[in-house]
Length: 391
Image (cartoon, rainbow, N blue to C red):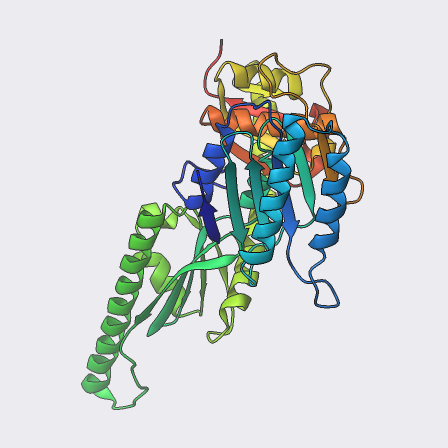
């Protein structure tokens, strides 16, 4: 991830550049001047070319028509468009697959840009009174931070992955041992020596992993290894690491980084799909028992207003949300516009509701869990919350 700033699966309170950026955006006060939120898929199409230029040109031209000539709002948007076009032409890294950009010239020349290795599925343009952060929250959920340990009895690669890229890699090399046959006491003594060498190597791997996990506040670990190394490794893990292990995989020990990323990310997502279901069931049980649960947009919004929400559970697509009749009086004014290349996208009220919910969660320190399977929350309006306390 390349960040430029000029101003448990649930998203944990972790200090990373993107999480800090999201918190700043969530704290942005509503403005009279338009605020542009632009999300672009920068991955090349089947012809090897970017296709965002046409979307930007057409969408910006269409949105300018909604503002009166010579108005301060139109002047602000025109300056934003000029600055955005300059940024796209001169400052985007060619390796970036996604871009999230926020601008409002009329709000003190506010400008934030986040270049991403992880792809953004579709182009989106929002123009409203505040930054639109729901797509960023979903991206953080789709590409969580985790560690992968790829090991045998004399070598290990430890990766810290985040947002679809390698954030950190460390190699731990042990002493290679050779197969030998001596017989008798000599053979037994040599075998003990080999076992001690292996155990020493495994201890070094565990110590290195523990340091990385602590430094980066990593919540999930995936282990990749053979039938000899993995049992030794698991036996050596302290409780605080063992509890974070999600899965154990088998891959070729020489597999390249992109293959390791693909396989481990898929394993993590499968695990998340299972825990999503468990967490939603916990929510519904808490709600039905009159305990620490709220379901539906209205009840969840009230709980957020009161600071009750410990964890927000929200559908992965805004169109799965049941629109509310009215939002709270202190909600951000409705967006001026939302345009996208995505088929079957949500309506304006659903888009505003999704963003209002996750923004309030960020503002009140609540965790956010994106539920990919819309069916899990369909009967409850697409959203619910596990509460910190009753009132």
